[in-house]
Structure formats: C-alpha cells, structure tokens
Amino acid sequence: MNGRDSLEARVTELETKYTLLQKDFDALNETVLMNVASLDRINSLLSELNEKIESAKDNTPPRSLEDEKPPHY
Image 1 (cartoon, helix red, strand yellow):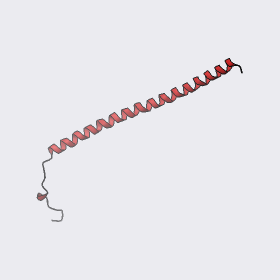
Image 2 (spheres, one colour):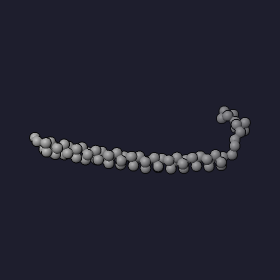
Image 3 (cartoon, helix red, strand yellow):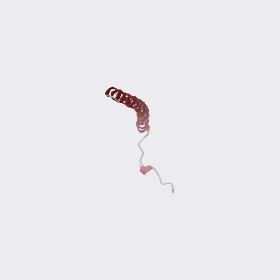
Image 4 (cartoon, helix red, strand yellow):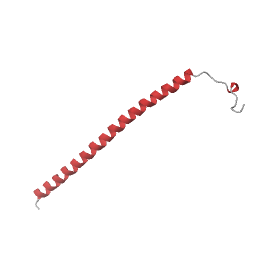
C-alpha cells in the first residue's frame, strides 16, 4: 500500500466515522427536542394546577377547628 492508498483509506475511515457521528448527533438532537416539548407540557400543567390551587384557596372560607366536632360525637 503506497502513501496515496493509505491516505485514501484514512479519509474513507474518517468519512465513515463522521457519518456515524452525524447519525448519532441527529438522534440525540431529536431526543433533546422531545424532552423540551415534554418539559413545556409539564410546566404548562404545573402552572394550571398552581392556578387552581390558588383559586381554591381564595374561594374556601377559613374554618375553625373549634366549630368541628370529632366524628364519634
């Protein structure tokens, strides 16, 4: 194998590795994008739940434990 063949073999190997790395990168990027979308949905739902909790707190009259009888009475 002369120098030119050796260089061509190295370039071919590098191109192959680059192609595989690009494929892995694309797969990881897709996974990250799906995770971002999931986190956006979770944050939206969490915000809605917080609003409902705050709304429920505002609509609930304060209770006194003195006014409540234990269940056995």
